[in-house]
Each structure stands twice: as structure tokens, then as C-alpha cells.
Length: 436
Image (tube, rainbow, N blue to C red; front, side):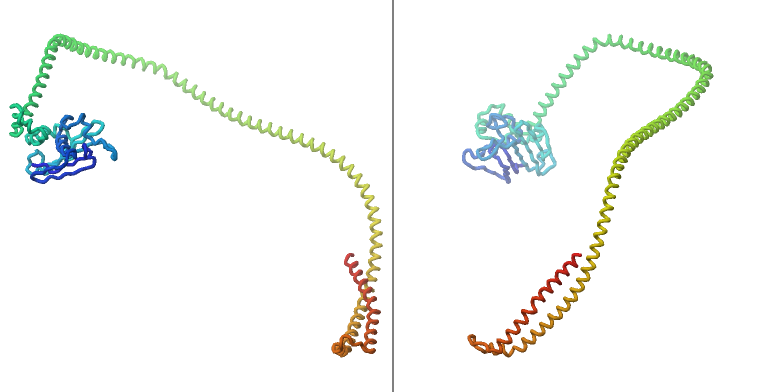
């Protein structure tokens, strides 16, 4: 059996989880002072159950938890796991590898595990008896212990030899057995004291037991007598009940008849109450109807007063309208006379319009003739225009040309004013006819 692996997390200077594997043979940890070499051996002893903070080179056991640094915070737990090779079955467990784990929290709680199963510190120590492995075993010799072994007394060396020879296991068991025997002896002494105390009480308890037995007997007799008396009382009461029932039967019949009559009366009373409720509803309805009729009468009175006032107003309005009708009839007669005059004027205007239309048509005929004459004159004078266009600007016109132009201007001056007046008259008549 050898130590195969050590895992540390949060123990002293090992803030991160650190794993160290050991092969068969000799393994050495080399490093400068203060690098944490001794912390490895401390972790092994601590995991195996060391309870002394002084052996861990600390003031208190919580100091083994990583306390933090300037760049890293403190951890809340220290954990160390030792893995042993058990292929030779030296340890009393059927596993080829056995892991021992110890945890310590800042709250002071400590936990032990064997192959990740929680156990007691006693279980860990019992498993490593006679193997030389343990917090006090010879397999772990820290700095300064060699000198202690050389200078140790015969008793101290004897303990070391007993551990190596495998006697310590039986010695521990013997001591445990002796402790158990001492405990049993203490318990026996307490039992003897209790027996001596109880012996003094046996006589008194004997007398009390006899009295209790007598009490139980008397209690049984009393219970039997009470039952007998109760049976007789029940029989007597039963006879009395039968006689009372015989006396009560006529009264029960009378009560039933009275009860039936009372039920019938209550039913009639209920019917009368229903009828009363109906009558009350009818009375309320009549009262409402009476109130409605009264309000209708008041409303009718108000309407009659309003109608009388309206009749007086209408009478006055009738008289006024009669006067207005007479005045209107006079105006109608006057309007009829004016209408006759307007109709006669319209007939005369229609005749004048017809005459003016005939004149307008004759004037239009004359205008057409004048336009045709002007067209003929213009067409007859076209050669002269060509001559005028070929003539020079300052060249004087001939006498024939001047005579023709003068004649045309006279005809135009003579015929244009009448045509203008005729056109104006026609336009005015058209406008009047449209207005009428």
C-alpha cells in the first residue's frame, strides 16, 4: 500500500485546487524556504485526523483555511483528499483505491469522507490502525521528529515499536474495552444502589399492592352490584314508561287532531294572508290609478284654462283677421283692376313687338342688301386697289377714283344711322319681353 495521490483546495497556501500524483518509489518535494513544502506533510497529517493546531504550526485550526492575499479573496473552506492504493487489501475495505477526505469550514464545522461517503473521525482512525499511517504514526516523520526519536524515553520508543509491530490496534481495542467495562461497572453500581433503594420500598409496595388488589376486587363487586341495580332500575322504568304510554295514547290522538286542526287553520291563515297581500296590491293599484286620474283631471283643468285663454286670443285674432280680410279684398279688387290694365298694356306691347320684329326682319333684309352692294363695290374696285398699291405714296388720285369713293361714303352715311336706331329699338323690346 502506498500514497497514490494528494488533492488540496483552500488549505494554507494552496488556494486553487492542486493535485499531486505519487508513483511507487521515492518522491521528493524540492523548493526554496517558504514555498509550502511543509504544508504538504501538514495536509497529510491533517487529513488523517490531526486535532492539534500547534502541530499544524497555527494558533487555531481555522488558520489552515487560505486567508487571502492582496490579489485574491479568502476561501470559505479547506479540503484535503488522500488516495491510497489498496490492491493488496491491507485496509479492511473491498476497494482497489481508497480516498480519505477532510473538510473544514469557517463556521468551525468539520466533515470526514471515505470514498466520498460521510463518516466519523473514529472510523478513519480505526481503519488505519496497525498500518503505521495516522496523525501519530511512524510513517509521517516531520522536521525535528528524528531527533525526538533518538532522544526519546523507553516508553515513547515502546509506543513506536508497538505501532510497527501491529500491537497498537489491540492495545487501542483493549483500552476501549476497558473504558466500556468501567462504564458498565459504573452502571452496575448505579443499579445496585437503585436495588438497595427499591428493597426498602418493596414492603410498602407489597402493602400497597394488597390494598390495590382489594380495591380492584371491591371495585369489581361494586361494578357488578351497580349493574344489577341498574338493570332493576331499567326494568322498573320500562314498566313506568309502558304505563305512561298507555295513558299518553289518548292524549297523543287528541294532540294529533289538535295539531291537524291547527295546521288547517294555519293553511287558511296563510291563504287569507295571500288574499290580504293581493287586496293590498289591488288597493295600491287603485290608489295609483286614482292618483293618475287626479293628475289627469288637474292636467285637463290646466288645458281647459289654456284653451279658454287660447279661445280669447283666437277671437281677438279673428276680429283682426276679419279687418285684414276686408282690407285684402279691397286690395284684391284694386290689384284686379291693375292686372286688367297690365294685360291690356301687355297686348298692346305684344302688337308693338310683333310690328318691331317685322321691322327688324325688313331691316335685316336691307342690311343684307347693303352688305351685298358693298361686296359688289369692293369687288368692282379691286383693280383700282391694285393700281393704288402700284402707285407711289405721294402720287395724287385721279378724279374718277375720288368720285367713286365720295359716292360710297355718302351712301354709308345715309343708311347707317337708321339701321343703328332700329337695332337699338329691337334690343330694348327683346329685353322688355324677357322681363315680362
